[in-house]
Amino acid sequence: MGKYDKAIKSPVAEGGMGWYAIDQREIDAVTAVLRNPKQMFRYLEGSQSGLLEKELCQKLGVGHALFVNSGTSALACCLGGFGIGTGDEVIVPGYTYIATASACIEVGAIPIIAEIDESLSLDPSDVEKKITPLTKAIIVVHMQGVPGQMDAIRAIGKKHNIRVIEDSCQAIGSTYHGKYTGVESDAFAWSLNYFKVLTCGEGGVFFSNSDEAYARAYYQSDPAGEMWYTGMTPKDVNVSIFTRSCFRGNEMAAAVMRVQLSKLDGMLAKTRGLKKTLLSHLNEPVHYTCQHVDDPEGDCGISFAMIINDRALCAPFTAALEKEGLAVGDVAYRNNFPDRHVYYYWDALIGDHKGSIQNYPWNNPLYKGGAAYTREMCPKTMDILSRSVRLPIHLALTEQNMIEFADAINKADASL
Image: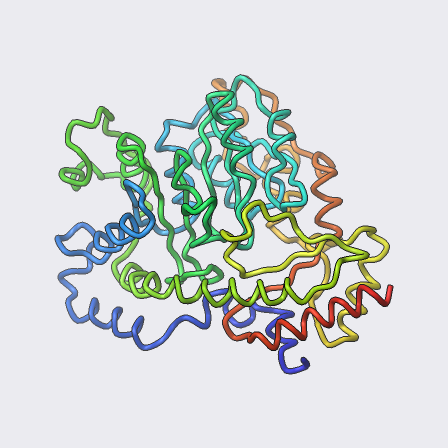
């Protein structure tokens, strides 16, 4: 297994989850755009962005798609699309990239951090505890391709009349009970940056079935959006024009994404097959439990996570894995490693927010809540992450690799 250590230890070094999917087709698509510079603006007839959006709607079975410049922007459009902003609170998990919280701040809303559970996504019981009269939305994050517990979260949203938004940025192509994640919630977002399942370098997509939310998201994404709005959605949508940020996607990125989208099914068929092979060769765990996966068939198959039973066993377990040739690195959270996927290291939120502009949005007089953040605020999250070991799975690996990885895990578990 030695020759695969680098791929397992550091997929980021090779360009994240999408490095293996770029070929001559993407190069040709970008070249075609560059050969016609008069068509390099996204709102022109026949634009790559417009074609991509239509193809995404058709594939996912969703009413609207809006191609923007990042996943963070797409999440801001999800919030802005439903008028969520100043004075509102939005529940986010303590394990997600900081951009999930940043999108809330972008629209003037206050992120409220909730615990995760063994799904490594939002803990529904803690979400209930964090709801206040100011709560307007819950953002569920599907980390590393694994869908969160959407039945439970959607039930909470319905019970409290709260919007449910799905951050599928790390789970492009994931499904839940047979439908793409997000389609049955109020809105959802994809990220298309360097580290995602599909990539065009940087980019994002807002999705929703709501005409009104799409119109607001459209204005959220372009300060002069009304110039291009006619014909994009039904003309009688009752949404007032407003101006906000500029999140427009660009034509070269859209061209790349159209090619990438055509590869999605084949890519996920392989990664899902690889993960099933790995799982089928694992012995019954003794010193760890597998991450809870609410819908195994919808899992992208791009990662496998083990939650070690006792923190004291983490170092011996990872050392035993390495002895067997499987270098998985350390646990998801570790001291003095500023991973912005863990709320503990969201320095822009922890403390008194002096780094923000005039302490915005926390000091806005329209905000009547008392959100406060400490590094100890989500002890369950920190405990789980301090015992979680994740194995990335990608197309450069083979069925034989999966059998060898399972053998290494079985031997390491038995040796403790």
